[in-house]
Structure formats: structure tokens, C-alpha cells
Length: 304
Ligand SMILES: O=c1ccn([C@@H]2O[C@H](COP(=O)(O)O)[C@@H](O)[C@H]2O)c(=O)[nH]1
Image 1 (cartoon, rainbow, N blue to C red):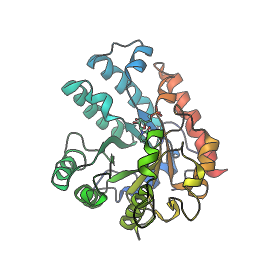
Image 2 (cartoon, protein in one colour):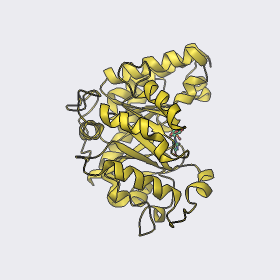
Image 3 (spheres, helix red, strand yellow):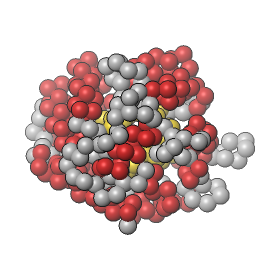
Image 4 (cartoon, rainbow, N blue to C red):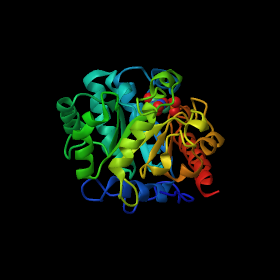
């Protein structure tokens, strides 16, 4: 999934296709990254950002913010990641805006990763699967984030459907927030950390897939490099799937941190940034320039 120098704004993504028609999620993601570089641009309509853009903090302001951001970000980045929480906060009107964001982003040629962090017992996971991973569902996305902390096996309905339909999932393994340390670094009876067991489960699902499997993991760019490398590390080299790396930008991680933390697995990493890009709006030209700067810095990271 090496993203070379991106070709520029609105570069069509040959082979990125649509779920079901464009092949596996791994193949579509690899095509998108090859065309546009590895940036995953977040669409997080924080109330403070709406205010900074001179918009009211209501469903109307949300709509103007989210659609304007989508128009710019989805024309530049390989992947856009709407954060569901900020839409849900506005109730039914917010969900209606999210539906439009998903449709617009797809039309602009970006893959859409809906950050919704779902995870429940199997029978309820079947309903979440129908909501986010089924053709024709109003909130269907190319990929979603899932929480494996009710047991990775409980996620089977979503994992099976995603594979069948050419969609992706990203399992929270080692998240970017400091509060997660105690839970995700806790040891299982077999000595592995909980985070490592999530990566291993994803790797089993991805075994044999080419160019890479559709079960990704979330590993924050903010964590210590020692947690990734070494015999006791996360073993991302065996994942054969994408790694979503939030924490880049507003949470403090830099391009050098990405290099230090992920080293040889960088070609599989999708660095995610939301506020650090969105703060450059509402002027579309300034926002586009911020996405391009970030995208170009990341392209150098992979090629250089
Ligand atoms: O470990 C995680 C998992 C998800 N996130 C989400 O990513 C963005 C980060 O936003 P920034 O503005 O770039 O900090 C946000 O939607 C989080 O919910 C994460 O930060 N860490």
C-alpha cells in the first residue's frame, strides 16, 4: 500500500471502486493510497470549530460545516473519516447530514471510513452490520471502526459481512489516548498484551489476502515506539492489513513520531488528522492548502 507522490487535487482513484463492485477493501484502499497518498482526513464538526468558522452550533451550522469540509477533503485525501459522535449530537437532523456526507465523499472519489466505534454482543452486532456495512443502507460506509472489547469473536457478523461485501473494519487495538494504557497494555494469561491479541486476531482474518486484507487496526501515533517493535511488540509486520494512526496533528504526534513509532510498517499506515486540518477553514483554498501540505509531508514519509 505504498503511496508515492500524490498526483494532486481530485485525482481519480482508478481501482478504488465501490463495495461489491471494486473488489476487496484492501485492493480499493491500496489503489486510493497509490493515487492520493496515505492521509486519512477527519471530518469532526466540533462545536468550537463551527464557532471558529463563524457558524451557529446547530444542525444548520453542522450541515454547512460538514458539507464544505467534505467537498475539499474528499477531493484531496485517499480516505475521509467522519466522526459519528459530532453528527449524533444533533439528533435526527445530524444523522441526515452524516448520510449526505457519506454520499458526497464517495462521489468525490474518497473512501469513507466512518468512525463509529461499535462493538456489542453478536446479535446486536448483526444490527450494526445492517446499519453500516450493507449495500443500500443510508449510513453504509467503505469501512467502520469497531471496538473489540466485548470480545473479537462477538464482532463476527461485521467481520464476515465486510469481507463478503468488499468493505473494511478497523479494530481498536492500541488507541491514542493516555487513559487506554492500563487496559490495552494489560496481559492475558498467555503473556500477550490485550492490544497484541487484537492485532493477532486481525492478522488471522487477513492471512493470504493480497495486496492486503480488509481487517485493519487502530494504533495511535502517540504511543511509545517500543510498544510496536520488538518481540513483545504489537507485531504489525504480520498484520497484512492497514493501520489507522490517529493522534497525528492536534494530539501532538508529528511526522517524525510516525517514522519512529511505525518504522518498517509505515507503508501500511494511514495517519489520521482532523482538527489540525479543519482549523484552516472556512476558506476552501486555505483548507485545501492545509490538506495538501499534510498529504505531501506524509507522501515524503513513505517514499523518502
Ligand atoms: O485511538 C483513537 C481512535 C480514534 N480517534 C479519533 O480520531 C480523531 C482524532 O481527531 P484529531 O482532531 O486529529 O485529534 C477523532 O475523531 C477521535 O475520536 C482518536 O483520536 N484516537
